[in-house]
Image (cartoon, rainbow, N blue to C red; front, side):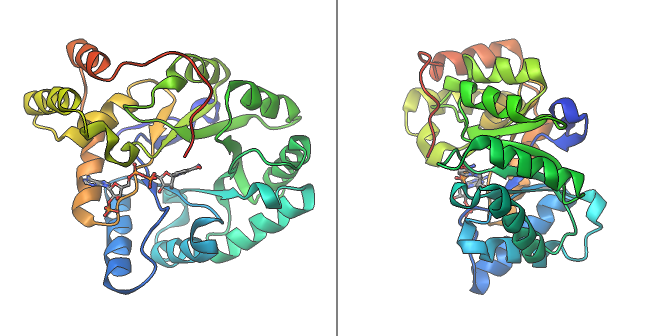
Length: 282
Ligand code: NAP
């Protein structure tokens, strides 16, 4: 696994982490998903992304169950507060509930899931309080466009905004115009969610063939090529979700893949960046 500095935190985080949205919650599929999560951790994919929203708290419990006997310091655990809970007191309480479901003592990263109707300044103050209390090491936001991200950062008094987790895949490259450069200048890590874009990147023949060609050249799969492209810049990470061991193994392999300038140009031609526009989200 390749690690790089998580923005200004300087902490080494794997370029490929693991998402948990829609993780199976029972039966054989759950057992396989838990095996997959553990296999990913063995392979160095120790950035585990979850949220109080996922399975209405059940996914945090399942993640907690899966990681129970893994030394805490080996993991980088991220979870998120729902905007509807994101008053000052509501954020503190939500973090306590997430910590108790995860059973992991402290969080590495706590994010506001998306901007809601509660004043952002209040949420940011609560996130800082959680750092002060040792409940989380770092704080950030998700689904924030450039101006909102800068506003969130400006509300912080003692801490720095560590991360903005946003939609980013080959058919949705809008963040490359402004969000990524502005985040990089400020040491804010960008975490790409839904990096496979629900399969959209394989739907056009031209795009798929370009990825297959690059894959053949490097002995890699199309998904590995896609993940390597998305994480090519410093400070940009991806968190694919995979509930099967073979998928996790394939995704982990992306970290070893180095694309050259001709690969990047071929991907650029097959999946144009498009015009600047508002931040896309799911
Ligand atoms: P994704 O990671 O782009 O795609 C997940 C799908 O791809 C699953 O069906 C998975 O199948 C399949 N897959 C994964 N690896 C594969 C492989 N190597 N070969 C074939 N299929 C593969 O989508 P996502 O779950 O939407 O996004 C990833 C994570 O980002 C989420 O789980 C969540 O943690 C986070 N997220 C955050 C937000 C936000 O608002 N902040 C929004 C969406 C997502 P299997 O499960 O069967 O392996």
